[in-house]
Amino acid sequence: MALHKVTEDIPPAFEDVYSTDVSESGLPRHRMPDTPSDPRAVCALILDELALDGNSSQNLATFCTTWAEPEVHKLMDVCLDKNMVDKDEYPQTAEIESRCVRILSDLWHCPSGQATGCSTTGSSEAAMLAGLALKRLWRARRQALGKPADRPNLVCGPVQVCWEKFARYFDVELRQVPLEADATGLRPHQLRDHVDENTIGVVGILGVTFTCDYEPVVELAAELDAIEADTGLDIPLHIDAASGGFIAPFLQPDLVWDFQVDRVVSINASGHKYGMAPLGVGWVVWRSADRLPEELVFRVDYLGGDMPTFALNFSRPGGAIVAQYYSLLRLGRAGYAKVYGACAATAQYLAGEIAGMGPFTLLYDGHGALPAVSWTLTEPDRAPFSLYELTDRLRTHGWQVPAYPLPGGRADTVVQRVLVRHGIGRDKVMLLARDIRTSVSHLTSGVPAEAAHPGFHH
Ligand SMILES: *Cc1c(COP(=O)(O)O)cnc(C)c1O
Image 1 (tube, helix red, strand yellow):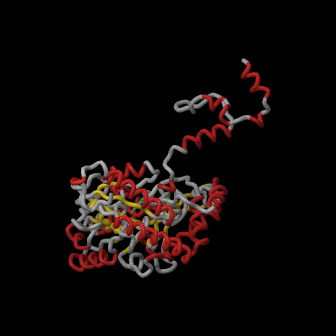
Image 2 (cartoon, protein in one colour):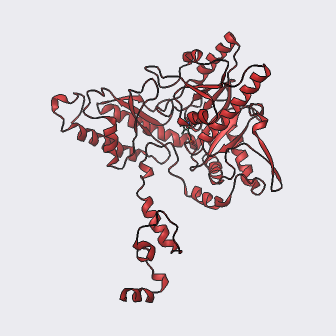
Image 3 (cartoon, protein in one colour):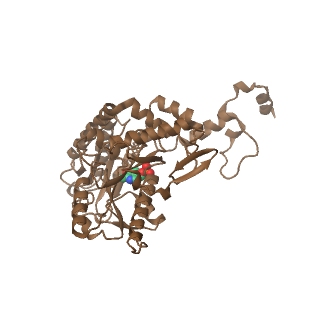
């Protein structure tokens, strides 16, 4: 075979990744290959497959970090071998985790020195841990009173799916209060009908996933105070600040939502969302150590060290935690405020554009909560297109802008949402607005003029 002969004559340094053995057929899908291959070729071919994924810088659906400074890449690389569970082998990584917990409890106004907390893989694991602590404390209270403790429930508004998961995995009834007709979150006056002696806690959301605004924490706490005064039920409040925990302190510093509210016993946040850490880190902080039942903390004598842990995982990578520390130090309070001030201004700019296009009504205009925008069709029954069709159309320009129904009680309302985060700049959003305009006119043309809503611009 002449070709083979030629190949043999070429020194390995000249080998081309697209003409090695592994490149000449599809990548194995079911069975491990018998022999090794050139690392450059395998890597290039896998990168080619990954290129088929959506472009994360045009993913306006995710809250998660998609842009990072070169220093973050460097720290992530160096931390490839840091295992969070080996606190004895990597004591400085463990120390950095503790510093982050202290910094966050200070940021969230916890009385100094009393907080306890830990990193997690994200807000979902944080929710499991916070929910477990609520459940255990409720059970202990019930048992001390000699009362049954077998029917726990958790009361919340339109929560992210992680709370449904918590409820199912840990045998808790989730009492999700339906949205009222014009509401985007839990309203304080709804609480009384849903809480009872079996309520382990109420979850308030700082940054409702579906609409991007905040639930009124002070008012929810005041209603729980009133319920306690009337019934004696002392129901703790947990705040799911997955997104808002890294926004409110900088964009709404006067908003009271955190440990300044006495009833707030614990808070979770996603470092890998607005915390500006790469994927893989969340946080949960308890107001004081007595809010985290000691029996949930494992003190294992592991490889020679005493290691208190409260986590669902055992081994876990440390890079995102170290990178979280980097972002906190590198930007400081003023840096986070500046980054998110720019994001909020960009979100508000987009809100103005959306409002001006004609067919849309803003649900959240980027003021007062997350740097984001959400909207609905003003007249979904009369509009010549649905938001799902607009989502598809935008996808042809590479944009990922989700359309979805609101949860319980408002399932008839379909919304679209854009999150503006670090790396989503003004210029990009101007191009998005251009493409939304073009898509709307594309979807509207072809429809007989009399059927088109008069508000549409052609
Ligand atoms: C994203 C989100 C979660 C889940 O957080 P992960 O970090 O993705 O696990 C929980 N609650 C809210 C409100 C969220 O926005």
